[in-house]
Length: 222
Image 1: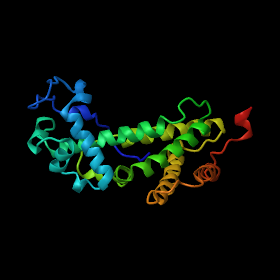
Image 2 (image 1 turned 90 degrees about the vertical axis):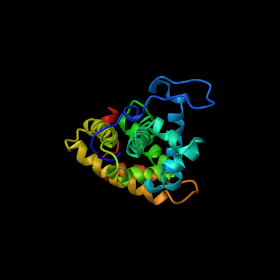
Image 3 (image 1 turned 180 degrees about the horizontal axis):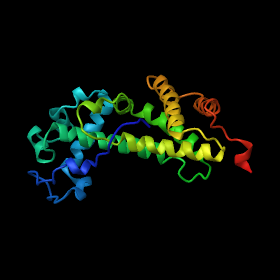
């Protein structure tokens, strides 16, 4: 839910997987990624970022160690460190997107989806604080050319637009979505350091919707 520019397909910066000594088979394309060394490297990078919350500590050597391969093996799957970080950015945005906007997908009312997605947003921030911090502080901006933040933010704009339309509200959905993100990012950030169950999130989200004029109106129930 953060406005950025561009989108990255992580497969575009992955080299075709190659046979590793001792492996049972050789993958021929990125379509085989779930069983490949390239996928293990990317998974290790995500785990490292989630733990450390710092791109500076996501080194090729540390990633290789996490994936159980030699540092030189990284270059069989990514052309360079920047390519790996570009794929990492795409993977992190994809996980955030799925976690947040997969919530409440079966709910008919946009305000109900909004509430479910808000809860999932905060849950993601608490479960993956390192990844969340890097995404929201735009730390990928200095190391990759493109990422998926804009596409994710567009989904927030879309659900806000549905709510505004249902409420016969003519405000600019993008502007209101920016206000929403400012509030919900604040709620998430204040709760990230605390490992205890987050209390009162439903009430905070209801108050957010009410304060920003997104609460359910009588006309939406007609």
